[in-house]
Length: 165
Image (tube, rainbow, N blue to C red):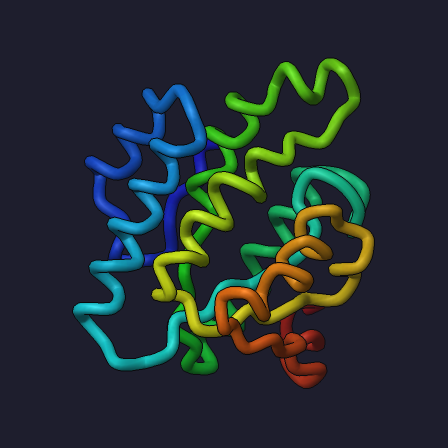
């Protein structure tokens, strides 16, 4: 899959470290480093898009990621300051492989990684794409958001047409 980041806040070193991580806590360190760089460069609220990835949504990881990437581009083109999670996908898949073999959801993605970056309080808003309700992860993010003071918003309808083109 080899995700290339849209964000200038990702470095080659971040991608190199991600390729060798062995647990989700190491991933939190990478994520918080990126969020720290973003916070230093701008006073704008950092936004994270939330949508189905591995399950739900369009039915496959590839279809969900393609839709997510388009949604990121449209949101960024419309001025949102986005935390790009895409490059984490390969590491998440690798670290959760044993759970997938057992047909289980890997809750460490949520309880360790996402909670770890939410606790940094660098992200200010979670914006939910359509079909978020079909995702274990997006449902958890929506429930977890208030504990970290995160604003919850919906992806604007007028932007959805631009994704579908």
